[in-house]
Image 1 (cartoon, each protein chain N blue to C red):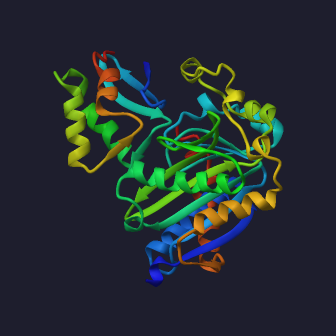
Image 2 (cartoon, each protein chain N blue to C red; image 1 turned 45 degrees about the vertical axis):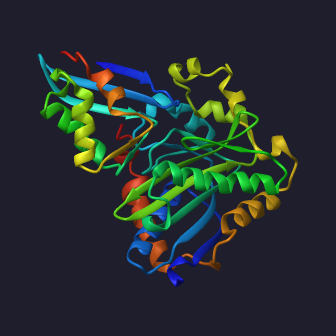
Length: 249
Length: 91
């Protein structure tokens, strides 16, 4: 049963490449059974745009805008769309695949439900919107991306705490087909944040997120091991901070 | 040559076909969908070129069989969406 006891890593901020690499390093450690299933909460320093594994980067990211504003750009190992990470709580859930629903959509729904619960703790009513979003009053407040590889399950996602719409849409490009398909014309109006819904302090938001994720689970507050850190640094350098990977598409 | 479709459910699926003369030499699939395992997408792209799937009577069925036989899963688009973009590809 120890295998089902979750290691919970406290909120920390790091660069985009390191954040992505650490998820991968932890997944390796869990798959080698040197670490247990892990939940991680983190932020991005500096702010960053992450693009989905299969996206054409120049189509969805204003690279000049990123450069001007000092915003990092990284390609995730997971699919999905481009995300601007600034004042948000990002989470990762990393565990053997058999600890999560076998059905991909069901796993999105289960973790989406945890985010809905986090919002509920803050007095905000959210709804899960398949495939991978959580909405508040029809506006996106959270998105997630899941990967299943070699028996390992990794899902990472965001909960937006505060929004700088001008900055967000100075670094993200919205393809025309996306613009046409929404009833809300202005893409900036399709997103919202915890702060817009309720003026709660940051600490409340992070606590709500952690509480929703550990609810009904066995857990302990853990640390990243030195091996995981060293491996993450190597993966960051060779993959996520490498232009060959970032500009692959 | 680029073709794109906005799939029911909101994801974007884009197909880029590279030609050399009259021959299709490469197909790239991109967009904000999910594909499991992720590495499998490159295999699917090669399969489409090698088997000239766009010339088949029912490309959707061929793609569905390939995904199933190779334990690949697409979330956010289906074989029929890809078949729609592939149909009639020409250089």
